[in-house]
Image (cartoon, rainbow, N blue to C red; front, side):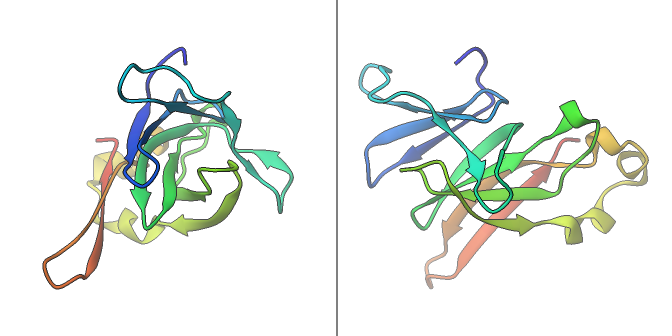
Length: 137
């Protein structure tokens, strides 16, 4: 992994997943940061495409959710890929574009900054799931 763009701990498997902004998903043993398996290619089988720009990661109910920042295509993205951490296959997409109107006007005018950039997930005391998303700015 050349750069660290996102990390997430998988409590069920006892591993850490990492991204470097490419389409690769890296797996690490948190005890010594060794890589127990080669990187997986994250791809959308329905479209037959690798998913470049993997950024922030978060474990959500056994799935690995990944912000996608396709800035090398000169586009912004409100999308989060739902990835099977065992295979790298994209199981579906979460569209967070409904959050855009809440962004500051200055951010809305700069498409490269008009993206989700951070994810966090938890269940409250009543068991209600909540996903938190932050923007690049």
